Image (cartoon, rainbow, N blue to C red):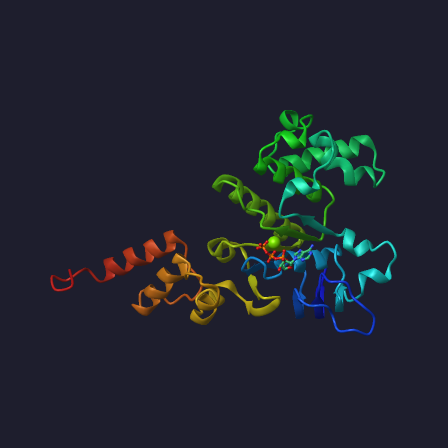
Length: 293
Ligand SMILES: Nc1ncnc2c1ncn2[C@@H]1O[C@H](COP(=O)(O)OP(=O)(O)OP(=O)(O)O)[C@@H](O)[C@H]1O
Ligand SMILES: [Mg+2]
């Protein structure tokens, strides 16, 4: 699905006819085109409008001015807004989207309203739970409210994955998850992205995570996009780092220094293994002299 924002403005205030939009403008003059299959990270300080922006794409909020187009058309022209149904949404606080008495019912909810047979529903719930790393037998009958934060988030994600969306939107999906769950979540998102061409849009405050997983990032400041491009370029730009008070991610620092010393030529960020190998190769070709030791 292609997502386009055309001069989008948003204000939470009550709008009056023929009056200017009420202040404050939470989003101002957003222009964006996201093509199918992108892995797009959204960064910005707290209060910069990231969650508001995501909710516009899902259709939970409508632009106060300007337009949102999905596959080139305004999804609101269709009464049932079917295109919004193709967008999966994981809230910043996953407990906000859990409501059933069992994990199974919660995940199956969207499928049941699609009137599928019980066998198909069970098979798909099973598969979705497996995809997010929740053991079917162990979790299916438990109450979603008695789970840990990370488990709740996985139930919420399974409830979206099971509907086979074209776009996955996740608001700070890794906040509060341990390393293993974070790795598993991104493995799942990359697999969906690679195998089904699903677009992934997520909010993150973790620059290392953006660098490792996004092919594009946009940075929001006070409701405006102030940068849009490949993370390895944006996150080594001192002006942008300064604007956000960010530190250049270590992987970029290492790659930049290795390049400055003529040890590597790549401008993409190297993994720590690649950097170590490059240094060893360099040392073997150019052993330390007494003077440089
Ligand atoms: N329901 C609401 N009613 C009024 N103002 C709101 C509402 N939700 C958010 N805002 C305001 O809109 C601005 C942007 O909020 P938003 O939640 O989009 O920021 P964010 O970038 O997601 O922040 P965070 O990183 O803290 O999640 C903030 O100033 C916030 O106070
Ligand atoms: Mg937010």
